[in-house]
Image (tube, rainbow, N blue to C red):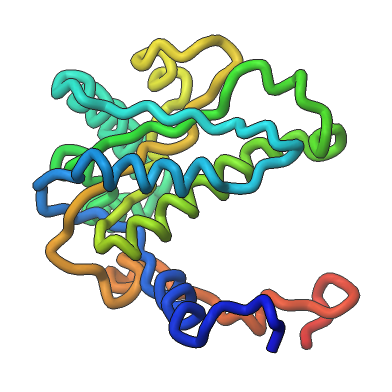
Length: 216
């Protein structure tokens, strides 16, 4: 055991938080105290980022009409997604895919504009800015779970339409609509597993040694 390791209880809490994180779609209204929201956003802001570019931008949605506009964009994309899914379209339409109207806090996370100026770590992998934002969202997700709050990541939207609705500058891009707030309970398994939509694959099928496809 490394001398830098946390205590057994602290390590257990970290692994429990990771294991019990869920992509939540059902919310119980209520509110998120200002100091708690600030703490969660600070956790997100402490995420690693390539070249320390910190490409994440958070937009807190407070106006009811704006929340309604975002919900309309998601609903429009939900219908288009169902059509694209073909024979699974009806099954998809029965899924609850967002909690925009019910969550206590609604956040939109986007990539900043002017990212082309940041070359460090992105010359051959420009998508590392997106990876950095994903790390920030995961930090927020885990912190929220530890605080007993649910968080759901909604990706059903047309990015340009959402960017225009939020007056985002040219070159920026929305990546996530985050529903955050109290829940009556957390799913025992990921919701898509509970609903029979998908079955997760075990790690052993995704872990290789020395070359792609060579399993442990």
